[in-house]
Amino acid sequence: MMAISSPQYVWALYTKHLTASLNASLAEVQITFSILIVMQTFLSPLQGYFIDKFGPRLLLSAGAALTGLSWIAAAYVTSLWGLYLTYGLLGGIGTGIIYVGVVGMMVQWFPDRRGLAVGVVAAGYGIGAVLTTFPISQSLASNGFESTLVLFGFILAAVGILAALGMRRPDPALVAAKKAEQDPDVLDTGRNYAPREMLRSPVFWLLFVMMTMMSTTGLMVISQMGAIARNFQVADALVFGLAALPLALTLDRITNGLTRPFFGWVSDRIGRENTMLIAFGLEGIAIAVWYFLAHDPLWFVVLSGIVFFGWGEIFSLFPSTLTDTFGTKHATTNYGFLYMAQGVGSVLGGPVAAWMYGTSGSWGLVFTVVVAMDILTALLAIAVLKPMRRRHALAPAPPSAGLSLSRA
Image 1: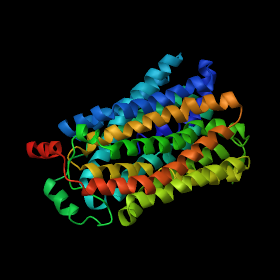
Image 2: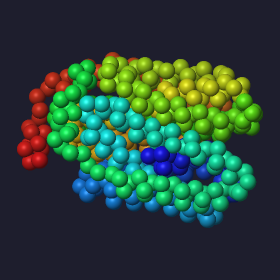
Image 3: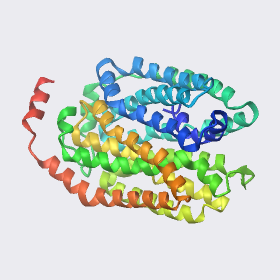
Image 4: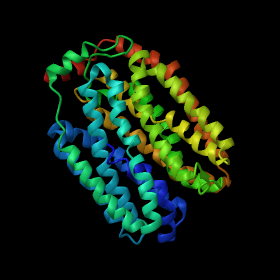
């Protein structure tokens, strides 16, 4: 997960170089980011199915190889379409295989501490780019973006493949024993729903809408961080002797990583929806304050870290909530369907946000929309999702679910 984090989280360092090299606008280049996330997410149900069927080791190794290849190939492109097909398409497929595969394994391995377990591995994705942000920034300044892409493409592929070779499925007997230790405050139906059954449930579609809105807010910041910093004239300002933009990106990776196991652990103790109310509300408040203080380099850095501390936990809370609700048997495939919400969010947070900024000439409208999404999602969690999931847990199993279990 650490090996595949850089394509998403250091993207902002490349946009300036790519717009100049390809003679393209920011909105055109940002389509690459959306393709990366769309391919990472929209193919995840199929990828999850293959992982469930054939096991994680081979699939995750292939995902790591594709991730590295996407950067190496992107170094030689001469057109926007070349960038879309390499960094976007190949990168999205490679990172998607690994992401959905690892999360799917964690919700199966640790049913008693599902939020924490998913949060820990999701932290690898959120915090992994800490190790690459400054080296990539320095390499871009001294060697250019082409050499940087090639060098780090080989590094990411090698590390990812070595890690993937250690993957294995959990022992069912061990999983059953762990499940008996699950906290009673966590709503768990105890049933396994096949994907087609899950897709008929209103609970799934509410989770999908909520994750779409939360994905939009965070991905807007990730994809537009460089543009926002330059607009507020703080990108190259010094904070503690370091340039504000790469320092903010580094701090963001740390807080984006730490929030995932932290709020995952909290949700194992006080329930998923209560945790969502706290975390999503924090995200909305932080983004609102950040907009008004972003012209100050120190506040730009500090508040960007708080923004990501209120956002990154979606990658532990949503898969945990989904698996609590629909079971572990098809967990990887089922999460693949929910993870598609991240792809929708990438379109809204990437090119659509850039278009809104270009049309209005200000980030004010964009920030207003994402703050509203954060607050609305926090309220939906406690006022709608919580009672809906309780009714779902207490409802009798549908006949189709019973047939699915008996066939299994």
